[in-house]
Length: 354
Ligand code: ATP
Image (cartoon, rainbow, N blue to C red; front, side, top):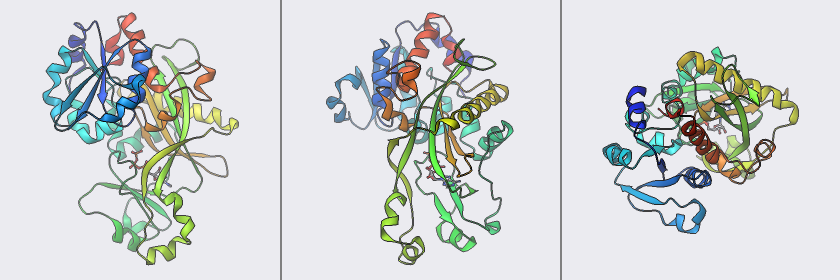
């Protein structure tokens, strides 16, 4: 892992920051938000310069850096530092580059990279959240113990790819891919809400924590193929016999709002997650998402945490029913840029970049 000291020394020479990210996932929003806060922007593209940015001039980066592969970004680190780049990580950036390589990237990066250790290992993620008092679905230790519908997932953010439902050990054996690390959770029946939070260590007003403050910028639900449409074909058991198994590949996102009486619990979960992160590894900074299922008893279960901007925030480039009550029009992309700007003005860049 690149040290905070090394990053702090790079930052000493930064004056005119360029906000850079990989051209995918939530990059339109990140570039748009950075521009709104007056930053120059740089798009890192794999293979070739994507044309679709031409259709979105307000979100098109000022410059592109074209590399052959995600791994090649590491070779370009000196060039990116010379351009005074600050990278903003998103799901595709970290997953495709590999969390291990990303951890080593010698370029100032938004957020605390220590969080990677706690997020990318599903056991550590569970340790963090459960020790914070955040309710999670029950974990089934051994496949042979499957005695109820369960959800099996692999390590890392895969946009739902590869995950499957099993109702017994035979189902598990049929679908498991050999050689991959997996985890088994009880299948939670309820309604999914992906809550977008932002933690600022600088905030002194609003929903304040022991240090800084917590914001809630939006909520989405993911569209997943083909589970979301499968019901139209009839009972899943009959489809299974025909070889049609449900899959959970994210294809898009829908805006949702929480029943208002759930807001206190939503804030409490976010607060506990941040406070515990401060105790465990010095704090998770910036955007994060608790991926939840709410039961008919109005209880939350958090089945996963994403510790950076999630693609569901793309719905709210122009604000959200929550963000608009704090600062109208604020997106997560812009909020990240705002935090960098505030840090720069206060001479505290090393507090939010690592
Ligand atoms: P991400 O890109 O968010 O990391 P992933 O590949 O790690 O995705 P998950 O987000 O853990 O996968 O799960 C994918 C989908 O599976 C969820 O959106 C949800 O529909 C469903 N799911 C996950 N865990 C459970 C659970 N315990 N009970 C019911 N459904 C679940």
